[in-house]
Image (cartoon, rainbow, N blue to C red):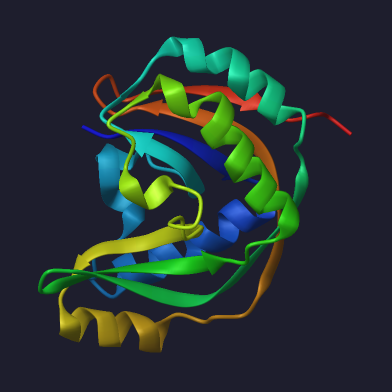
Length: 176
């Protein structure tokens, strides 16, 4: 099971993504909101691998001092996965976001076993997942039923997700 270090979103942005998940579910389409038996929450993954040592937590504490910061969600992106597709909202790569990603990679990356290649600097595409394993027909329907306005949000905290134990360790950003 995957383990990850993720950026969590402010409550309004979280709610906007959950609304999109619910729209997909209402249309009987796959939704990221159904993943992990309802334990999923909207997020932007910084790093992922087969395991992450708890020794990464002090690095997350340091990194969380960079939060909150502005985070803008753009339009749809589609990642092909064989004959299926993953539908996501693009996260516009600001200088702050790219810096936080590079710092996470430098500070916590050594604690990630089998770091996913798509998490490296220059290979990372920041996004928030809406649905996985869509057929081509489902993808067309999803693109038609969802609205795609730009969402001006905030990155508020970091989460280390343990996919084996299905537990999270959340590190809040500064409360200012």
